[in-house]
Image 1: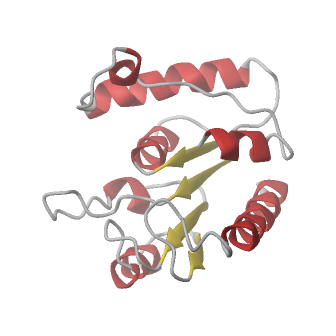
Image 2 (image 1 turned 180 degrees about the horizontal axis):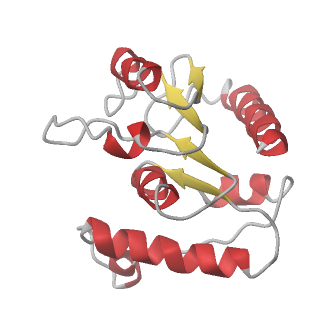
Length: 167
């Protein structure tokens, strides 16, 4: 996400943060309420800059951002590799289904945590229309063959720029 933070600076201010478990050097994530609170603190810092805020997260960060967007007014949510399926196999779709604003989902076709048939089904049942950008051959980290990555990143940046412009 460091490289993406630099790219995203082209469309707006970027506030980066780490969850408490990361700052403590732990591998096991904090419970969801702790994660949401850390996200809320970062949102407060972003709001202090006086501009509309779009939450951007990768994997768990995108899921936590969706949870927070159900509680706090934000201009938008961008999800890099949303982890719809938990490691246990359970489907974690409540945060997506209950989003009050359209979100942008960036997903790879080889992402085992968000099989496209499952994600498309959830998005089709949402009360607000979300946008899904599918990257052929990309994994959960949206990585493709090295020779293809620059073009993929450019396409993702174009979709992000368009989404932010309309948020």
